[in-house]
Length: 310
Image (tube, rainbow, N blue to C red; front, top):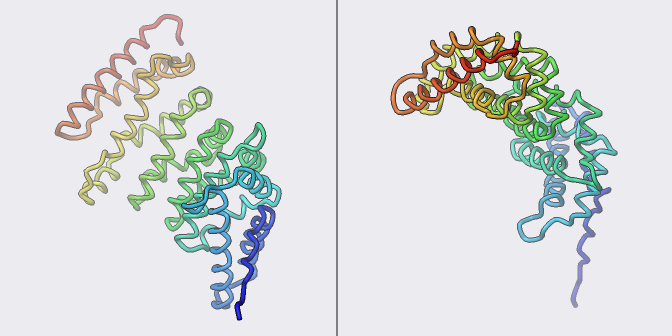
């Protein structure tokens, strides 16, 4: 006698989103005292995260259905699940965090009609960006939140908000955190913020150039990060060189906005003094740095002599 088992019906996008929302919300009702209950709740979340990830990016054999992906994005926003992704991240295990960050990045890039619905959701819940920034204080989820932040920064409105928020100044602290991986990730995000969207950066620097360059000078002359890298025997560029590379983007750009030119002209004496005293060590890398530094110095000197700038 043969027995046939009907395979379970795949969840619809609406059902998938409801399932992951319910399982994330359920974590609120569990406590560390209820170890078994919490373990079960976490297993349920992890199962649903994998299901959503497969629906968004496929499983290696079957490609994702574009209509389903769009509907998932719509439902995620409708059910306020993006906020849960962030706020529950620290409770989850390593694999679930990685998958959730992966889903976040796909969802932000998903167009529904002529708009990015998840980006619009974040625009209406900007506190989520502030929360992602302060997550650099939590080394367990810092790298996940860093990748999620960098996805947000690809969109001008979100990058502009972070630049103009009080959270932005925290990056000057985070790039010098004692954890090397977290500090490096924070610097990658910091660099994206300062180089991705020229207009937003120009507007920010015009409004905040004094406080920005005061903080930025501390990075360029920071001794403790260099010491930390040397103690780790790490051969990658130190924070002074990284900071210089961000700075030279503004100066070397042949199509600099007038606002940037004005800022460089107003601060040319201070910047030139800083650059003349800046050194990154010895070797081939030092030779290249000195050549680039000389070009940047000459460009700032040229700008300082331009008439009717300041």
